[in-house]
Length: 261
Image (cartoon, rainbow, N blue to C red; front, side):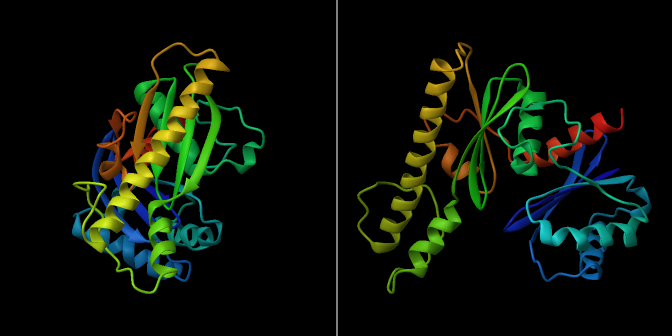
């Protein structure tokens, strides 16, 4: 079995694959103060809940956008499995070409997303990952990662609104009924959800325009969404045609299989 670990700024998502089947996934908060012993306890509890013996885990592969937490995760892996994890970066043999001005600056999450989409759907494609930040990435039909755009995520927008105002309440987001809301919570919900749909569709439109005009791409462009808010936003988007909640986990498994061939 393979343990895959996607360390994001807000949450860390863990998954266990048995060959190509994702047996389960587990989400915990990303906490810079968590020690390696605490991570061992977290993993041990997760395995117990799902009746997995640690001896069944053959390898660990990690994608992280939080460098300061990596020492604890590497130490945790050594303590629990007595081996080093595989850590993704721009030098990893992923099967795609990083055609980017500064490859070392590309986040591991963006690389893994692109690998997953290219292997599952081919290119050209735009990947929209709705995490703490919203990333827009482009992969071509010949497997070139061209880069993309980064925008503030929905939670950042929420926290900015609530943190800078005295009387606006925190709310749980849902699909709004109307943009002309008649209560303050409904107004906040409509503003955030419709506002981010506009941001996302606007950027996708600009990216597609450049791909057609500058890069002379004539094929249909798939737009794949992933991340915590992907279902909420994607169903209202004009452009997103595929939702992949486990895209990062699939990408890590695909890269591992390539490395071990």
